[in-house]
Length: 205
Length: 205
DNA sequence: GACAACATACATTCGTGTATGTATAATTGC
DNA sequence: GCAATTATACATACACGAATGTATGTTGTC
Image (cartoon, rainbow over all chains, first blue to last red; front, side, top):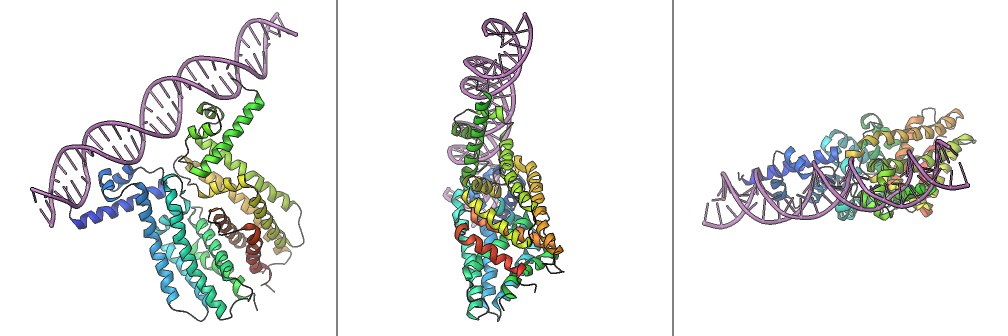
């Protein structure tokens, strides 16, 4: 019954994938550890071996989602283009279009958008929010760069601008992932983002 | 033990209020009917008398939230002002500021933003989405009125504009209700909305 | 042979739904 | 207008399943 270390790692990943599957279809609180185990072709024993409990699986999924994102933004920030706002706009479009192609990532994001951080999940609420805030701070840098280059109103407040953008992106993603099919990234994503950014770029002359 | 009809109605309302309290603090799936009953100073017997089960309480809360909203929009639409976009902008600000003052409404809205419509709640997902879509259609009318009055780009698509606005509002509300205190409606609400609407109004000359 | 990587078995808790009891308000017959 | 009856508005009690956490067993690896 005992597996080699590599095999053990594979079962851990299988459990994570199975958990994502269960959580994203039935919801966190409606998924039992037994379902997760069964779908991963193991028993609850294996689950309890690799994870302390259900909440730890939940948290592991969040890390899996969040890290690549902040990684992408950090890489993009590494080189400063002449028009930071345009750079930011294109980053947003890129992020959206990338997400559109990655089904597993979409489902994970949907999970964390729609889950309710209550009960046993409450301790993770602030934790996950803090991670998000750090990513937000990264976005703010684009606006600050733009301001230094005199590409913004003098009145414009980078913090408000970041907040505005963030609210808009959140709204888009929320609608996009809601299952309502109200938004099609391929055909409308670019338009939406551009429609939004026109408010920043073309109006301050 | 039997109460008069009026008293019975009061207990029903107490149960609803208690349920909102429980759901919004502990989450739907972490609230038991016993907790709800106890907090309402009744027993589960009373709950099962007034409601078929927990999902029906959930749905009742949604109706309680949604109806006043679409009512307000309908009333506003009833009179057409010269500048529909400005009218819409002011409606948005009004809705936000009204919400800011009504704590119970805020908590109810937060509940439906953050709950996960899975498991036993799945049947209500489409139902509640449909209600939302109908309200969205109402917003669209402002843009159509503006277009008829030649106050929009000829290229501008009311549907995309509505979608853009909706995503933005959703994002604001989501952040506002998230408990992060990132947004303060009183000081920033107007600014945010105006920042957003400037993209529509001042750029098409 | 010791420990890792599980599977199996068990105890316990919790929540739901329903069945039943009960006191009182509302309704009916006269 | 008042007793008799019935339906209402709950409270109480019970049965059942489901899920969790843990304790213990088993097998293979290092």
